[in-house]
Amino acid sequence: MKAIVQISGGFGNQLLQLYFAKKINNVSKYTNVDLDTLFFSNQHNPLIDKREYHLKYINGNLNEVINEFTSWYWNSVGKKNFLSFFWKYFFNGNFYVPINGSNHNIFKLFVKLFFNNHYYTGIWQEDINNEELRVFLHSVLEDNEDIIYSKHVLYFKKIILQKKYSIALCIRRGDYEKLGLAKPFEEYKENMDQIAAQLDEEPNFFIFSDDINACRKAFENSPYEINFVDQSTHPIENFYLISICSKAIISRSSYELLAVNASRKMTRNDIYVDTNWQLSNILEGK
Image 1 (cartoon, one colour):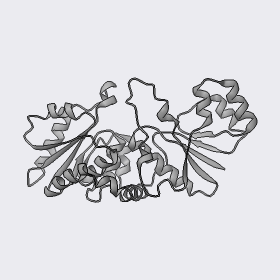
Image 2 (cartoon, helix red, strand yellow):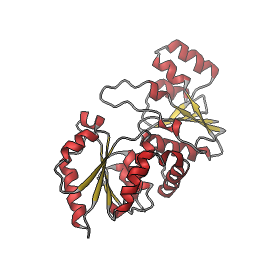
Image 3 (cartoon, one colour):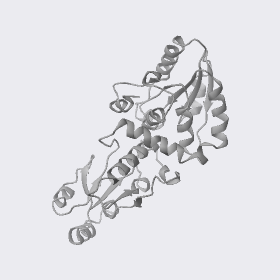
Image 4 (tube, helix red, strand yellow):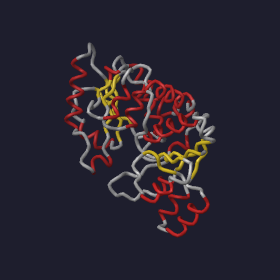
């Protein structure tokens, strides 16, 4: 029996899905686990920023037992070629059943009765073991030292480690701004004041954002020392920089959430996050 895991979304979502794929790969009922990456060639929503398949750049043995796979099913549906789809999958028996996630195609549910392969799809995968996830994230960083020792990383790493209180201020805008979901800058400033009031030295803030120019303008008169961290060549670079800060203020971003979760320095009390956000429970036990 084969399992196929759809990879979609940004780097944070992709890491969660890869963690999930590697986890179910250990389940003996599956002969192998493949990744379906077709999402990245079929992005058409003007309100959602286009994502890149970043997993293809990571090193080490993360993909050792997981082969990239582009589902023929999605190809057929994308082309709206129903007859071709019906012929290939009903008669050839090569169908990957959605047993998890948001897909609700009635025909797929019907074919589920006849085939045994499992197709997993979803942004937030279920059955996350928080400690296992942290071990996985540490392995991602350890296996990609050639990336996280780039000039970009080394420059900001030196500054971060020089300060007693280096605070990662993570501001998500992009498609959240288009959708009206972006957290107002004033709320971030309130969080900054709350953190500063608890410290015995002036903090140094490091702003990470997908719209760094807007952040420069919004915080140009800030009373605090601020470093604006430009977008890195690969998202794992800033992911690592966030993880080595002493505290963090994060938005509703799985990328930021996993970066602070990968930190060997921060505890749960060092992380400011909206506790009404369902995924914030990933930080439990940290």
